Image (cartoon, rainbow, N blue to C red; front, side):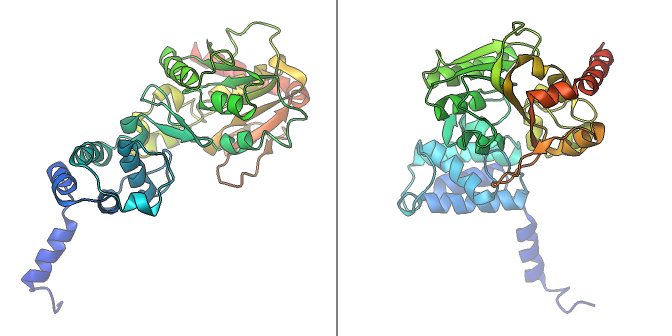
Length: 340
C-alpha cells in the first residue's frame, strides 16, 4: 500500500493539477490577474500545455504561439524583444487576448484565423477560413531566388492553387515586381482573399488572380518560365487522423484522393504544355512524397533538401515532364474517370 494513499492534502493537490482551466477561468486570469506581456504569454503557454493544443499553423512551439496572439492584439510585428515582454498590457488588450485564447484553446481554431494575419517569407498576409494558412517550405526556395534551379530570373510565373496568394506575392516581391505572376485557384472565396493581399501590396499590375480548375481555363499556348504548385496533397489516412485544428481549414485545400495525389497527377500531366523550353515545375506534395515515388518509380524526381525543414518539394524540368508524359497522363486520366 502507498504510504501517501490516505494523505488528503496530496490528493487535493493532484485534483487541482488535473483540473483544466475553463473559459471563465482563462478569461478571469488574463483580464484581472495578469499585467505584462510576459505574464500573459507565460499563462497562455501553461493553458496550451494543459489542454495539449496542436501548433503548426505559423509556429512550432507554445511560446511563439502565445507571443503571436499577444503581439497581434498589440499590432506589433515579430520578433519580440525584452522591452516588449516587460511592457504592460491595457485592460482592453487583455480582454481581446482572453477572448482569442478561449477560442484557440477550447475550440481549437488556429491563431491566424483569429488574428487575420499570417507570415510567409517574412511578409504579413491577411487570412481567414476561406484559405489554407500559409506554411509552405517553398518559402525557402523563393527567398533564394530559386537558385540554382532557374538559369535566369523568370519573366512569367504561374502559382497553381494560390489560396491567399502568399506564394505569388512573395515571388513578385523577391523579384522587385519585375515579373508577371498568374495566381490560379478553383475557389472564388480563395481568390477573394488573394485579391485582398494583392491589393494590400499594390501588386495589381504584377499578380493576376485567375479562376481555373488547374490548367483547364488557361489559354492554350500560354507559357511560363516557372510553375510553382502547392496543391491539396493530404491522403485519406492523414485527413482522418490529423489534429482538430486542421479541420478548420477548407476541405478543398487539404484532401486529394486516397493517396493525396489526385491534383498532383493532373498537374504533372499538363504542366509541360505551359512551360517554356528551359522552364521548370516546382511542386509540394508533403507527406504524400512516399505515395508519389511508389506510383512513379521510374521518374527522377529531384526532392529539395530544405535547410529549414519540410519535405515533399520536388523539381522537374519541362524535358523530364515530356519524357514521362505518358505515365503522368495515364494516372491523370484515372483520376478524371473516377470523378465522373
